[in-house]
Image 1 (tube, rainbow, N blue to C red):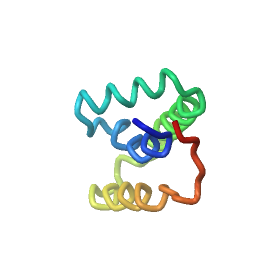
Image 2: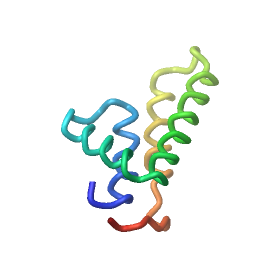
Image 3: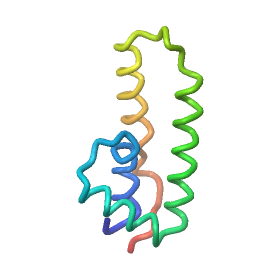
Length: 85
């Protein structure tokens, strides 16, 4: 990861286990040396866990997938300012 923004752009994929081991290592290296991103990661991980517990098992798979896509699309913001490394 060269910047915090790159880290944030890849964080959902990391949490979902959709990255290669090399990409995961880059994320983990960034987490180890960037306290603000480490805090954001912990907050997002906690939020995901809370949401998973609150999701009904009866929710149709297509609804779950559409919700996941919607959140990924709309939760990324170029308006946020991240420190450059």
